Length: 105
Image (cartoon, rainbow, N blue to C red; front, top):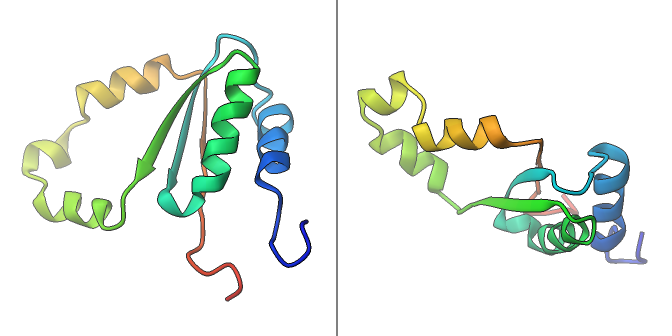
């Protein structure tokens, strides 16, 4: 940890790539998180590229999920998006990162 500033995003990205995901060249890696994890997401993207993997960042905006569920029609609730299905079928590795909005709480 960095004194007074929390974990080092670059070191954490290395850990995620090498230990958690065991990333290999050519893999397509989907990373899901929110804008709250921006420093880590940027470092993770770089670490994935250094390993010759293909990163795909899926960053959720504040309020995006609530808006989706409020606006979704029956077709959205009863089936899967063809685009999301294709993405899932072609994904070699995926990770979701939960980021708190107040790390000191």
